[in-house]
Length: 225
Image 1: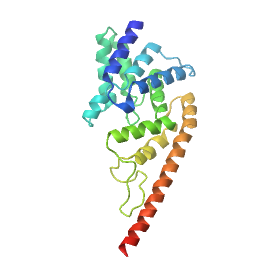
Image 2: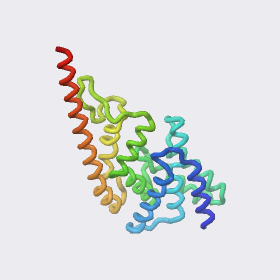
Image 3: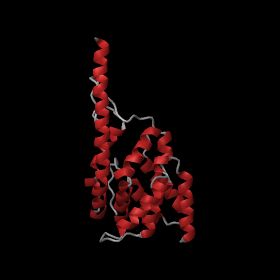
Image 4: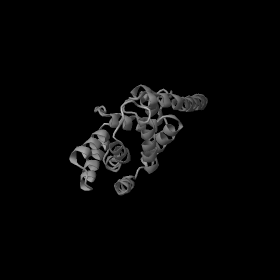
């Protein structure tokens, strides 16, 4: 078991190239998953859960190179091939594959097994609160996406422009809407507590941006006189 765990960890670390989804993110997800598992009635298979947590983002590199790819789908197949290659049965490796395929927030494939639901919740906990804000800003910066965009009239967009990709869009579209998406009550309670910090940051940032926009509007009026 120790040798198997080491091989999975080594493979995971060799796949991680995204600083917003690095090995520390993976370890936080695994730690959260184990914590959640201790507080749910239906007990998971810890071998399946551990492997799914460790390998859930191994498809990130492919998605970063080709944004048309879904890292969850790519990672699920990579994990399946890797696990069967080190001696896992097709059935057990298939369970891990199913967990990874369903862990994405934007996925249309909801998690079915208890292991998949715990992985989903553990992964989403790492995008709530202060950690979620920090990771989202890191991800947006790495992909050359702005903090915010403005409407043609100079007012602040809160993620409502067509095709918008920005931090404020990601907060309004995802970070602020996470709590109802959790499958376990335990994770939902943790998320509710953490999300208050993200909400405070969002409102403070929005206020500062709005003040700057208003000063810009006044400046343009003066320069146009």
